[in-house]
Image 1 (cartoon, helix red, strand yellow):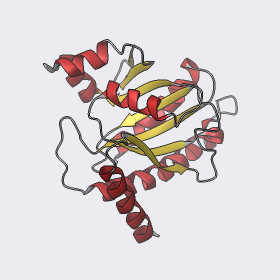
Image 2 (image 1 turned 30 degrees about the vertical axis):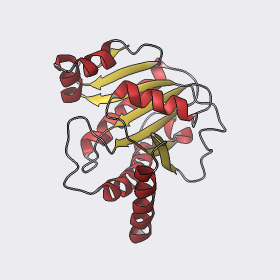
Image 3 (image 1 turned 180 degrees about the vertical axis):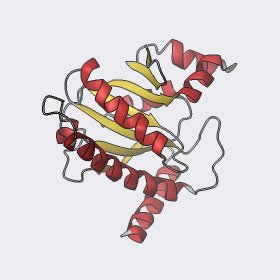
Length: 210
């Protein structure tokens, strides 16, 4: 099973990188029986964009917290996108090769889905049952900056319903974006222009910027 996933990841990465016109592509959807994002309208797309080198408990905590918070902030169908850029703006392509990271992202998505089921098994009946309609997509992009990634996702038309994009970041990334001397990054965070983007940073107190 692991070798099959790794082989599929390697082939997907090779094809994605070799395609000059493709800027964003979805590799897998968890659970596998979930409908394609192009067939069911999505109102909110939560995007956990990271190097996943490797996926960690911090990623899990950020994703689970954001999913639960999103139900009190936004209505309508939502999906979580685990996104990895093969051209990261500030991190080297090491130590794990791209195909291993993509495979780890799939396993992480499966674990995250199980984690949400476990959390809700121990919560009150009045709490929202997020796991019942939780769908997680695993995708790749070639773009390094948040706003460009949102544009690529929108232009690719994988997600029906023109969903709002909410980028999830850790506090270190959020701080780097705010304080960065790179005008490109500052522009992405503060002026998202025509793309419906927000940045949700999990650090007490929780901060949402639009």
